Length: 328
Image (tube, rainbow, N blue to C red; front, side):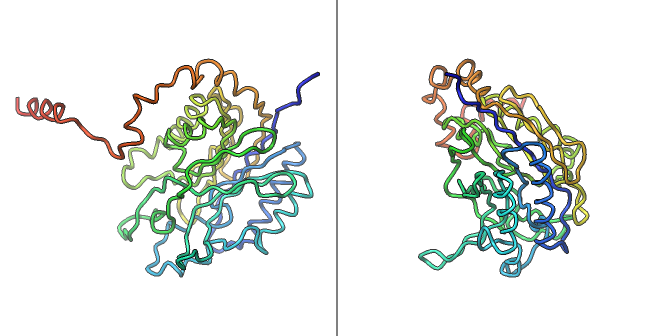
């Protein structure tokens, strides 16, 4: 008896800029247009970017954070996003969507603000919710910057870590933007057998703390996702919101990466653009069962610093050696 196909046709739905004045309704119309294009190309799953419903609002600082509440979603779906869910269910396409989440008060009356991504199956059911773990940027107003990157003011780190969920006939994980730069993100999911990681991002080309990195943004973007895919035997779908948004130029280069580390599809613009790849989840086993057979080759007993230590620590002996050389 032949085995059922484990090919998932994925659409990576890049968005162009969303300006401050753009309404949720206008953005949802753009998302639905991309869904319909995906249906025409036989997609099972469409992946949208980080903070896909609004402009990237952490580029502005407000002293009273409640003034920014209108950028957050208090429910999902909401009245404004319900048409997206309805259209996806009608078309029989699942999707992943990034947005800013403002929770209901917890038992202590505290509300939480997360950079969130959800995964929705083809029948419209929400499979999973992920909260961004690695929050970049700064916590305080830095008026000398050409634009703010105050993510650490607007969002708290997700406490749950990296999950993996059964969906679309395989094992799926999620991460958001800066998470893709950290090898631990992929490995946490890799150790749960992940076969496809979905990642939305908003990446400004100008990196204020070190402008020498500006020219490398595209290289670094593909470098981390290709290496993460290869070293964990998984597909990675990285989806941008690119172009010039409120005067800030952001990276496009949405791509779909195979478990071999090869890019199999990539956008050509920084506008709304859909790229599609038929992703065979069985390809993952070629790497998980050979070169990266974790059970056979990993040595967790010698990796203890990874979880026991946060920052880098130079040994006393190495410090002494370096200080001695500096005095020569």
